[in-house]
Image (cartoon, rainbow, N blue to C red):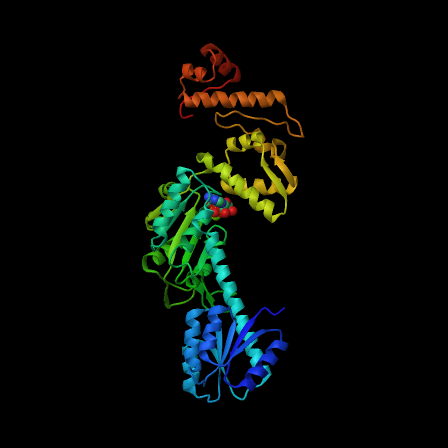
Amino acid sequence: MKSHRILIVDDDPDIRETMTTLLTVNEYAVTAVADGPSAIEEVSREKYNIVITDLMLPQMDGIEIIKNIKNIDADVQCIIITGYATVTTAVDAIKAGAFDYVMKPFNGTEILMLIKRVLEFQRLKVENVQLRRHLEGRYSYENMIGVSEGIKKVCTLIEKVAETDSTILILGESGTGKELVARTIHYNSLRRNKPLIPINCGAIPESLLESELFGHEKGAFTGASSTRIGRFELADGGTVFLDEIGEMSPTLQVKLLRVLQQREFERVGGVKSIKVDVRIIAATNINLEKAVEEGRFREDLYYRLNVIPIVIPPLRERIEDIPLLMEHFLNNFSRSKKRKMEGFSPESMNILLDYAWPGNIRELENLIERVVILKGEGAITPQDLPDKVVNSVRGNSSVFLSLPDSGINLKDVIEEFENNLILQALQKAQGVKNKAAQLLSLNRTTLVEKLKKKKIDYHINA
Ligand SMILES: Nc1ncnc2c1ncn2[C@@H]1O[C@H](COP(=O)(O)OP(=O)(O)OP(=O)(O)O)[C@@H](O)[C@H]1O
Ligand SMILES: [Mg+2]
């Protein structure tokens, strides 16, 4: 298949002919013209991958031609052929935007190799652009799914802070999307072409964390056989994402504080101070304020990190996002796993809306992946959902129970169901039994009897 187009510009008909033959037999689509104006006309008309032009031409020289062509199509690569390979011509040609130059007399192999190199370069360039777009696309705001006030607030905040260099502290329960928010910020910041280096403060053993973060010099400790660059140094110009910051040991908290204050540190076993330009984004699912009160987290570090807090609400507080997320994951998994799913039945939708989602979006994502794999096709019904989800009772919306294959103890389940609702009513009524009874459409006496029988002793704030 002749897919790559090459334009030859030479006033010598013999060269035009030999080149055309050489390239045609090598499966390139070739056009040959004799002068600059015809070359420019060709490039405006057709998409070419490569233009090979002679330097010395009667009306317009090769360098002029390249400049003009590059103006029309910046992606086309030009090769100049010159009989006088002086340093000046070579430099001029490259300055004008040529990919490379070839000296006369040249042989066919030389030209073919060069063409291959150009095409490879173009391929990588396209791939790179696609990859970058893909990455940026992955973390554009559209990937933050949700219509709730809570998620809208998060998005507005991200938009406001992304282009600044401010330190960000992301707070939210497990699985709420803290890492997604961190990535969205980085890929929408001016640092997006520099690295985003994640550091999971909870997953790296304490003994290794310091060297992971700051690197070490050769011989700093047993096993340090060579110098190692730490993650802060790797992130220079970009962003460091300190995940699970609440798990950081007290000694490291001190060292981190210094980096945040001075943007400099030493490698383990080193004396030279290393300066870096990094933005810090930290995240945690623990209550840092409480950790500070309890002396587990340094107060000064907390204030350094808590410049701009972004709080991601748990999924149970933004129920209106659940259907959108369900649809999003169902489409994604159906596509990636090549299954034909047909959405959720109303009963299953109700169960999922009613569930408390302690593992938040990650739990929802995992559940849908599992259902797509196990079910394979058709609409999702309560039978396809895990027992844990189906049997959980929450909130005041109607509850649909489905009998698990393993069966249940009817008495126990009803008892638990009843207790749960009574407790919720008492909570809502702040312990006022009259009001709680009303909420359950019971007489006060019936409720009091039930409480006695069930040995429920309800106190406010209990
Ligand atoms: N608003 C959202 N829209 C779409 N997908 C989301 C959203 N929030 C989170 N996710 C997805 O949910 C999963 C969990 O998110 P993420 O890993 O960012 O959570 P996390 O808060 O860092 O969790 P953990 O505390 O467990 O580390 C990811 O696959 C992420 O892409
Ligand atoms: Mg995370």
